[in-house]
Image (tube, rainbow, N blue to C red; front, side, top):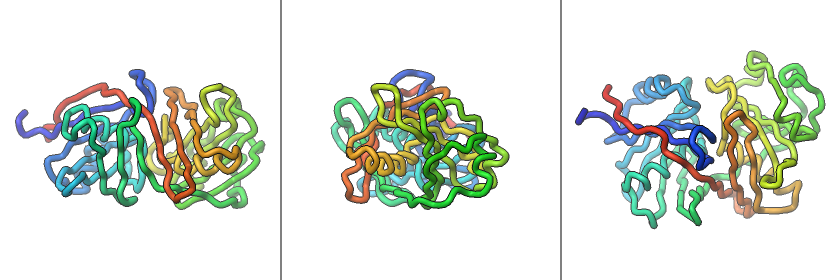
Length: 268
C-alpha cells in the first residue's frame, strides 16, 4: 500500500453528492508514461481522469484523459484537481493553484466558497450546418450553428428541446473529432442558458457537466444577452451549474463547487 499513487473521485460543478460531473484525480509522485495514464483512465471509466504532477516550480503539471484519448482542455477535472489539492492540504487554502497544461497556464482560486478558474476563451464562428445534422439530432428546429477548434455548437429555440433531445450517437461520429453542444435560453430563474454536450468520438456519449464547453458557450451567450456575468445549467441527468465571466480579454472565468466522493490508492 505504501507504493500506491493517491487517487480520488470528485463530483465537480456541484456541492451535492452524485450530481455534477465525476472526475478521477491521480496525485502523481512524478511523470507517468502516456500509455499508463491512458490505461488508468480506461480503468476509471469516467469522462475524464486528471493527472497532477507536482514537479513544476511554483505549480503543477496537469493532463486529462478520457477512456479513449488525451484532451487539450477540461474544466470539470481541473476544478476537481484544485479542490482535492486544497482539501489534502497540498496547497495552503489561501493560495492560488497554477497548472501548466496543453492549453497553457490555468490558475484556480478560492473565491466566496467556490473555485474560480482562469481559462482561455474559445469563441466560434457561424458556419453552415454539417450534412445530416437534422438526422443526427432528430430535429431540424435549430437556429444557429457555430464551430470552434474543438466543437460544434447548435442553438435550439427552447430549454425543453435541449432536455428532450435524443441524438443518434452512432451518427454523431460523422462530425469527426471533438464534441457537439446544444444550447437554448433558460427558463429556470437561476440560469441564463442551458446546454448539453455529446462527444462519442472521445469515448463520452454525453458528458454530465462540461467546463471547457463554457469557454465557447460563455462568449456565445454574452454577445446575445448583452451581459458579461452568466450562469449556465447543463441539463444532463446529473445536472450542474457553471458560473461564467466573459470580460472580453480573450480569457473566461469559470466558477463552481465540488465534493470528494472517494479516496484510495492506485496500486499498479
